[in-house]
Image (cartoon, rainbow, N blue to C red):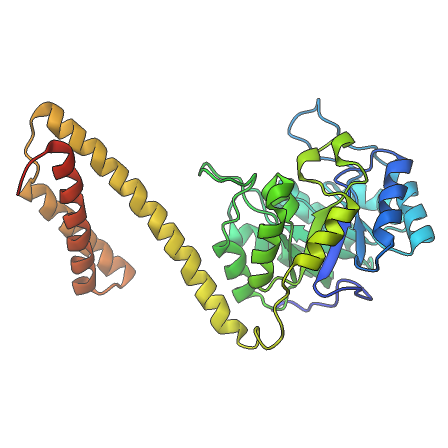
Length: 356
């Protein structure tokens, strides 16, 4: 268990809302976005990228230190605390000199224990709030380890941000949600607030609502959403940024589960885990049956018999051996494999055109 203190001193909305542009591009863009977001007292933090860790050096990488003075103006003019991404210790040192107190560690940094440790060492003794996005790779232990490093440095105002993962699996989203990972994070550390970043997960504003709604059903504590005064002119990630009016409309349309609905959080968490694992099972079965089809076409080409009992016995023996390792009921696994084998035979029969 971590000793966690509230991330923000006051919260304007439940769930916690953090919004602002992907990047600070100009003083005018930053202030105008903040002005429009301040018209409705919804957000608790104004997010803005000052240093941008881009995949290519030819992409816009932020305005750097000069943008921090713009964020100071936001705080002074609109009374909204600001937060920025820090990727190296020097970012934190410079930001602290400009009285910035809210930060997040991005996915490209949380994946590096050496850099997280360096940031933790720099943050030691400072009254700061730090959020940690999941690493780009689906590694739960690495994500939790980042919190352990900050906690060891005395940081207590912390939260996690689920922004999806880079995988080779096909997904309609920019980053694969892999919901089972944040669910397991929450199970292990319910004391750490979790936010969802549907903007980076979606990669396209058309999917932001559905991700944000699912995240709320997953009992997240807040949302971080990218909002730009004119997304069509944004210098980075324009397709995933909302206009302020679109942001307000999205928030008002979200269905926020009531306390009554969430009273049995533990049961819901377990059920969510089952749903995600079932989805993974379906994906694995689909991949297995695709290989079955390839085998069938090969058998047809080479005139190989459909059923080869020795191979079937090898499959059963292997699965039962794995059952011992995973402490699974052997009778159950045998029945499961027989059902799967029956479907395999049907598929191969259809391709080879052999009658029973």
